[in-house]
Image (tube, rainbow, N blue to C red):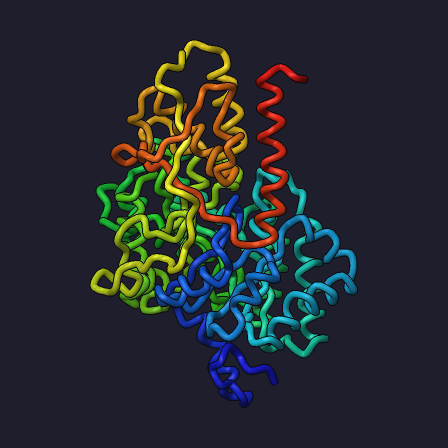
Length: 483
């Protein structure tokens, strides 16, 4: 028997009690890694522990991250990316190899892995059915591999699903059912979850509802009470989180699965990149969510039942796709460097506030800006900004964003600095054919933060930056007309 995360679960009965903890309600957090300069894994684990997080959801089984979680006492949900589903669905041997390398190995080293999420929102309608035929077989093969490894009772298999897999034709939660085009597939998956005791993991995003529909009531998206509640029989829904959650509960009950546990795999609010994405709205939503979970009141269809949820997300990720919107890079409750964005009581409004990451090492306090005498009408300025923002993160620029108050020259300087920091302050990354210069005077203004990058701390970072510096040199040559 494997000891789980230092909790001393050395007997079957005790192990069962420990396993039940993940379904007992509370707040975990998503740890994404799509950053140009990620914090060291050991620093992030310490950040998690300093802030009282005892559960974390990962999107991939990264060896360094799982190694850093060894002996931490933090319960782990490990994700499998969608691009692996085909291989795992088609080969039991592939599933066995994945389990051996990414679950058994780390559990034996003292990592408390509880769940494996096979796929991330694979049934999104925007995927056009790409993963419909591979997700469930992959789940079955991974479950069989866990059983063969003797871990079937300890590690459960699930899939992280977007909330678009269930719906209500009337808009009332009590009429919830699974999406018609995947109804049969969803019943097979739910039956699989029910038979193994695994939870149904759903990602819920009230912000996306607001982003998609400008007329969506802001107060209904949060937990402040609503002037536009949804009345469902004798129940009044004051926020979209409860309504969404109960639409899933109703769908499960309607199809004969009232006892399947619901886990909210992702829920949060971004702080930048859109007019409705700002620290104030994010704090209000996340604090409201935390207080709601801590109250133990449950939801109208499940009163008194604990709510189990994972905040999205821990830190900002400047390499995330912005196809859904510029806000995608700003979901963190912490900035890229582990500094809190706003005050948030993780144990309720009266609890302790967020604690920053410790021991973070930065590059020099130096920024790259547009030269004062530069002509904005020069074509090279536009070309340089396009390149900088194509290679670095400029999503804080725009209407009603944190840097929306900058003038034209400020926008150019922001773009130049973003690229310069991404390139580890390489001198060649602050030239732009003579348009840019470095300064030791912080150009940050109001809510607009000109960052200083995190210092490279690993061989992997150094290797990555060799390629980045090469790109900077090639860009300089292109601007100079060498090619």
